[in-house]
Length: 378
Image 1 (cartoon, one colour):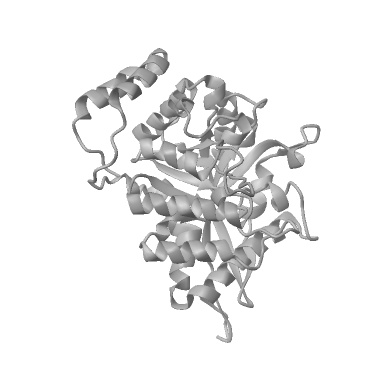
Image 2: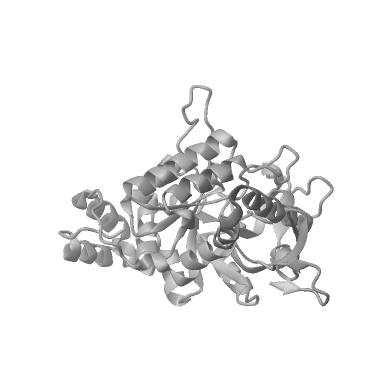
């Protein structure tokens, strides 16, 4: 808390971990003929100086203290391969103490062979804090077999996995496809109940899409079958391309999670520098101003709807939850519980055949041989 010299105004300074940011190249608004290139300055825009935030009419200065970043160059189908893109990202993160790397993974291009990611993690201990997947870019359904070896690596090295998540719900209430839907991501997370899996953008799209992701998240908590999380980038967004001052989906999410004592499952993220944060400036605001509006809108809504609980919720959503998930790894302490058994022979067949050549088959078979009779912890 900061109080000015004459004590007339109190302002609170909040620390922020942005759990969903990027560097690299991206087709502007999906146009492959208009490629944008974001270097470290694009993220540094939000981290190098305080944010001027307004919460319920009161100005304050917040600070993005940690930026969790993946390389866009390895998240497009015709971009750099896993090895090159992630090495580039590490070299950038090494130069900025606020930057932390997620390893961008390309399961469909490698046909499920995780050798590059395995080697990168082992050759750079502690430098990758998680894995990033974009099923939509590579048109590989999130619960397909090509993700399995990567998820085994996440389990082995205790790395959370961030998935681009989206669902387009048709008029009949059914999804248009199942590429990156909350259901398909939940299906994969069930197979690896010890691995935290984040549904980026909470389903993206509109209120129906967000509700679908909320339903899937709550189902995972109620059934205790996966460690599912959501980040709230692009949630409750306006048609003007900027954060909406009302946050009905986020308010609903928080209320449901409070009932379950599970408000640790929400992460703040922006997807910057995409959208209004650099790709397509909107409303006459520059990228930093759009970012400041996003923080201001969300904190104000939480203050207005949760009163005495608001400070704790703001601290968790903007900082503590990501700190616990990615850095302290509080989730890695097993909690004994019974979970649905995955057919052992099927997993060994899939994984051993696909991974023997990369030196992981033996690790996985040994793991199941020694624990096949045990219940797995959540």
